[in-house]
Image (cartoon, rainbow, N blue to C red; front, side):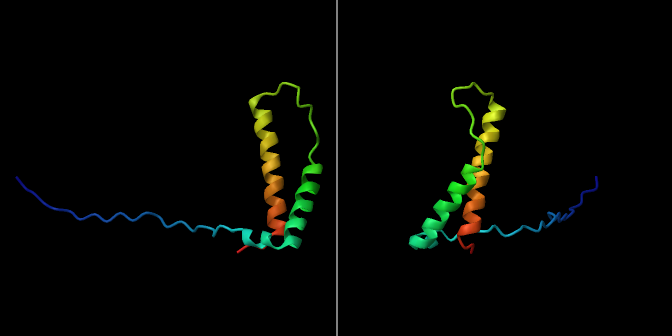
Length: 84
């Protein structure tokens, strides 16, 4: 019987990751930045069309609504707060 040892080195493919942009939330300590963020959020949310809260909605519609609100908040924060 023949017996042998094989050393096999399998390397994972290196993926290039985009660095995540972090918001400088400490900038909100400045009242002018805080006010600008509030105004930006109010303008972005005003652009979203109102819907009847009493109407029954399916899960996909609710998910889309929350996604649009989340996107508006993120856009307003990125535009107003300096990123690190």
